[in-house]
Figure 1 (cartoon, rainbow, N blue to C red):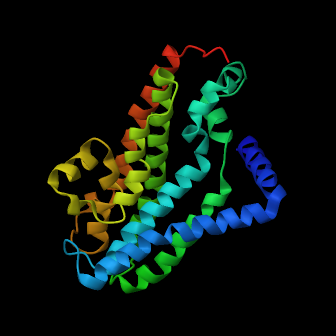
Figure 2: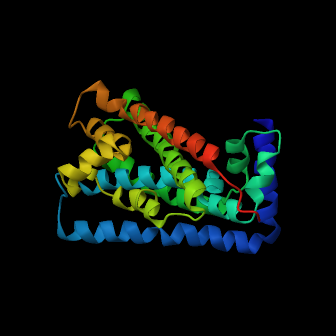
Length: 258
């Protein structure tokens, strides 16, 4: 952990060398994401509910997914830019260093300006938490925390999958953005609104619904099942195939010669 925080401090000092640029990018990240909030507000100006969910309940979905994705993207940025590491030979250098490869890729890049979106998510939470009608008992607070933490780990696993596929293609596969950026955008609303087929896919294949839809049912009192409270933890099983794909790709890796 000490080494990780040393890298974190290094990235922070590097990005703060140009404080004006950092602040503008931070504010830009904060403002750009508000387009989604505005679109949700416009929708509910016309309709009172979406699939039975109120405006504040949908904002809970939005804030959870935005915060989870942003934390994964900020601190797992190295996996998002992994094709660049392969292309310029940086990964070849990582192979001969006496540290774990996942750790080296993880700390190779941190984009702290993206935390501007976390500030926005906190503001949305500040509005949605007291107006959602949820009785915030300790179990509901724990459920919300699990949604954010496990959601961040799940998005991180998707970035690992994206990086692992780059072992075979040497370039990033844009379709993965459907699951990462797309997962954040689609997750602005309860996944049930997209139909049963999509909900099943996001439950059993890419388990984003386990960190959003099912625990939301528990939060809002639509379900009293403790299983729905702990579905975010179940979603972490996705980490194992993601890691397995990374290991498989690593065994098949051949240097680009850069």
